[in-house]
Amino acid sequence: MYTLYYSPGSCSMAAHILLEECGADYETKLVALAKGEQRTEDYRKINPHSKVPALAIDGKVITQNAAILPFIAAQFPDANLKPRDPVAMAQCVAMVGYLASATHVAFGLVLHPERPAGGTDIGEAAQKAIGDTARKNYWSCMEEIDARLAGQQWMMGDQYTFLDPYALVYYGWGNRVDMPMTDLKNYTAFKNRMLERPAVRTVLEKEQSPLLKAA
Figure 1 (cartoon, rainbow, N blue to C red):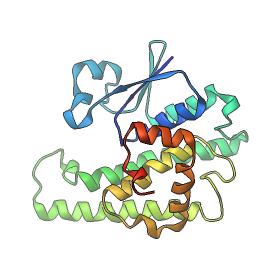
Figure 2 (spheres, one colour):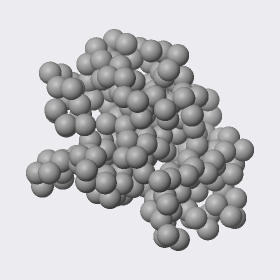
Figure 3 (spheres, rainbow, N blue to C red):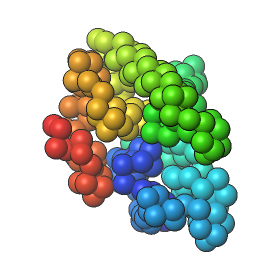
C-alpha cells in the first residue's frame, strides 16, 4: 500500500496521476496547505521540509517529485512509464529536476515576491520588480516546454512517461496566474491529450481541478 500526502492543485498532482496510471494500491491523505497543515508537528515528522508530495511505503517516506516520480514508474514496469534507454532515462529525470528547480521556483516567486527577503517587508516597488521578473522567467519556461513538444506527442517523444503528469501541473499553474497558455499551441495540444487519459481525468475530478473547466 502506498500513501500519498497531497494537496489538490499542488505539484503532488503529478504523483497522484502516476499512481492512478499504474493501477497502484494507494490511499491519499490530504494536507491542507492553505490552512498551514504542512507546518504542523505531525506532518513535519513525515516530511521535515513541510512540502507535498510525500510518499510513504511500509513506514518509509520518499519526498520530492524528482525522487517520487521515477520511483513509482520503476515499481510498475508493465505500465511502461519510464524510458528503457539509459540516456533517455537520465534526460527524463533531468527534465523533472529542471521543472522542480527552475519552473517551480519561478512560480513560487510569482505568487510570493516577498520570499527572497524571508518574508520581511522589502517595499512594494521591490516586490513588484521581483514579481515581474518571476513572471517573465515562468513564461520563458512555458515557452521552452512548448518548443520541446513541437512535433511530438509527449515530453519524451512517442512514449508517455512519468514526466508528462508533472508537465501538466505547470500548464495548470500558468492558467492560475492568468498567463495566455492557449497561445502555446503545442503545450495546449499536449494538455488536451492528457485530459483524454482516463487516469488523468480521474485524478483531476478527485482534485476538482480547474483544468477540467478549461477543456
